[in-house]
Image (cartoon, rainbow, N blue to C red; front, side):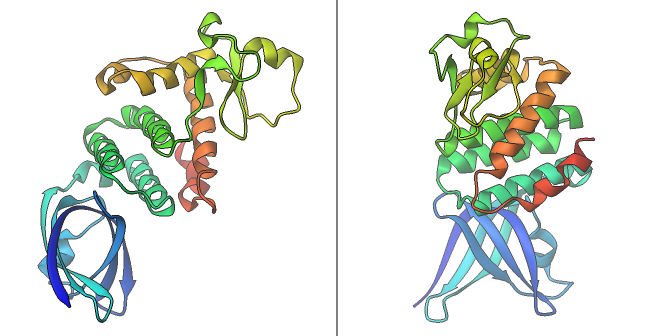
Length: 255
């Protein structure tokens, strides 16, 4: 049985298939990550508008006998030109797309999180985009149920809010929580990651509990930013069964 359908969709990636066709990976609210063929030569209208990070209403034609799906039309509502005009933004959007694909993301909550991040990349300055990436990666961990306990020490139960912002906590490599500054002094046999200033733990708390507008207004030190960046990129890389290719160039992007 053949059928036509339409859905809101965000284009993630395109892969050349044969000379004039492309396999398009899409992110849609209900089904999550799906693929569809894009047919047509260089003069095709669809070929010009089906491009990474474009979002809009897409019409699909599914042939259940041949087990194929093709794009028949696309009404783009957001082109996000600002992403392609900046190297860091392009890299961050690529990381987002790869993360979605490799974690088999689905659901409206995750879809809306991704839209907010890509919309922010489109309009924000580069420095704003860098802290925006940190917020997105932590929220994505929360979406996957992999967030840490940022309130108390995983070992002694002490409130992390009882320490000064410049003192440092250490995240467990296996996830779950942080060792407080006092417990860090005595060492542990548990595998741990590089230390993060308590200011960074407070920032992660704010991402979880405050409104996006409130979190955007918060300032963190360069040391805290660098610590959170290393922590979140490592956690993100360990989220999937295979390493993320986009992160292989992280040192170049963040230099």
